[in-house]
Length: 147
Image (tube, rainbow, N blue to C red; front, side):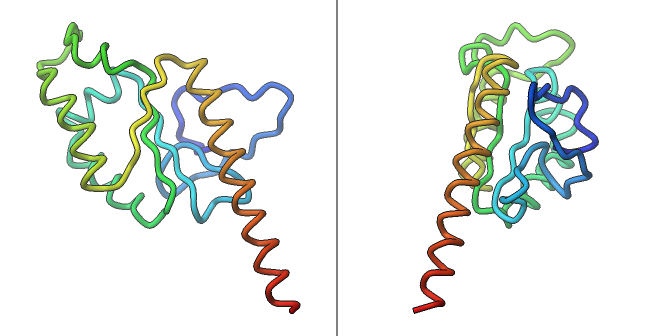
């Protein structure tokens, strides 16, 4: 987990390594070179569509070196299209267009998880699956090198 994460997920029963990541908020010990997950609340995301757009797009560009990259959104697509945002003038069409435009431009997969609880479950599952795949690939590579 990135040390700059503002509202980090709690990981009951697990030891979590906190370190400064170059990009993203979450990854896994065995998948540092392949997985990045950027977490956003609705308010955070709207800031990235508006005033923070340039900085956010530079971060998305930097994420492209990782083959598995996700934008974990702690809200629903319906929340985004409804447009009853506070403290912003971002139009819903601009917000929705940004999500899918960034997916196409930077290859980051948007995951509308709805809330923090589902966000935590999604991060845990992504790290688990990515780690399993990495270890299987490593095991396969070792087997190939011994034959």
